[in-house]
Amino acid sequence: MDIFYTKDHEWVKVEGRSGVMGISAYAVKQLGDITYVELPEAGKEITKGVVVCTVESVKAASDIYAPVAAKITEVNSALESAPEKMNASPEEEGWIAKLEISDPDASKGLMTAAQYDEFVKSLG
Amino acid sequence: MKLTPLYGEHKKLLARFAPFGGWYMPISYEGILAEHKAARESAAVFDICHMGEFVFRGDAAELDSAVTRNVSSLPAGKSRYGFLLNDKGGIIDDLIIFRTGEEEFMIVVNAATAENDYEVLKKRIRAGGLTDISAETAKIDLQGPLSRDVLKETLGIDTALKYFNFAHFEILGEKAMISRTGYTGELGYEIFINSSKAVELWSKLLSDGRVKAAGLGARDILRLEMGYSLYGHDIDENTTPAEAGLDMFVDYDKDFAGKKALLSRKAAGAAKKKVAFKSEGRRSPRAHYRILSGGKDIGEVTSGVFSPSLSCGIGLGFVEASLPVISDIMISDGGRVELKAKITDAPFLKETSLRN
Image (tube, rainbow over all chains, first blue to last red; front, side):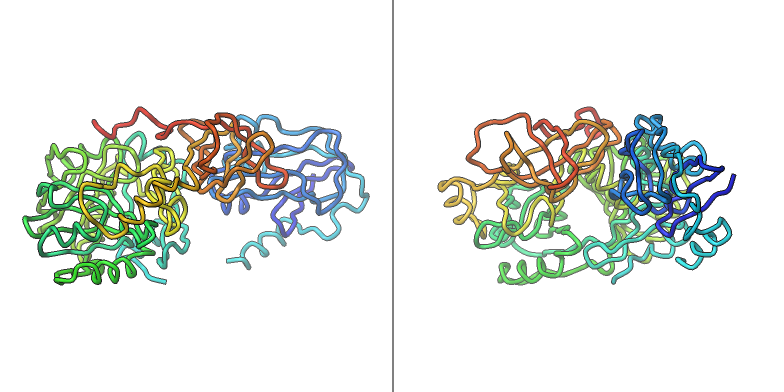
């Protein structure tokens, strides 16, 4: 499984046509304690770059964008009652949605883990 | 941007900073929720050095003419919360007045408004005797149910101070003032000490394992859970104490700047009234969201947060004063966010250690 990142700090793990998405450790650190996640609906088609859902922290509400074009097959409903999982484990237990990726060239325009690390460092 | 004497300490603790009232202040350290929990369940220490302190030496009647509270009747060793009003009855600032002697008072004001407050007070107190001691005064708040134990065991100060009372103590070889006040709704103290001792006092308090450093993020949630107003958000120059539901902090039995306007605005009927509300679910209401009733826009949210203590959204706002009593409202951001809410009494939290 490969992991890719957007410059808006979403990640997507890709294995063939299936994927999982969430937000990066850097993103949750910036947001602070997450108190609410407005999950998307399973079955929804999303296009790359559109708002998928909203995450609220004690500081602000932030939109989360689709890293790839896909159909949402499952959402992490555990986040409804325990949004703090996103802080504790942003890239594992804190996943947001499972995806059926529609774009065969999904990683195009996304960063690899190494590139994303460099990108985050450049943000200071 | 101004820095407090504790800026270096906050850097060491890897705090997140933001501008607040002209100051670069710590918003959080470990995390807002953990810091909120420390204040509610144990003890938290806050750098409040940005707030302003003035000393007035002179006749109490002079100060009485400038602020809404009766200070002539205030006994030494006690303090009162009140307002500085403009000539339209609007709130220039909210403040606490401490009577430190027969003819000596300390006035504690908000950071962003301090400079203007000083000018207004100076004009009103014609006899003089007002000094700004903000620069040499550090204010460090210790708040939480265990704060009395911390004072005793870590600072060696055994005190039975009652709510809104204060006294002077020796801390780190320096005369300091400790007041049983705060902005969290818990048992707690505000410590005023010479700025040169701020770092030492801060470190000493944090050496107690029961104490966590807390930032302005946690402080905002703590105060809102108690329904306390924040100047510039819930109260401002266009709002009277009566509209803000704070008329009990106005002593009408004496004369003061703004009283005439207050009385005539009261007689004419207020344009808006303050409401406190709880919203359903974990989504947070936020300042400037609209308040709707029966599909009609009736007002605006002035403060809103997710309350960790209640696991729901809470907020304060203003609605049109002419409305009949309503309970069910909607909170809307004008777009996708629509929250069902109910108007309720403040404070949102009833059982705290405040009066322990």
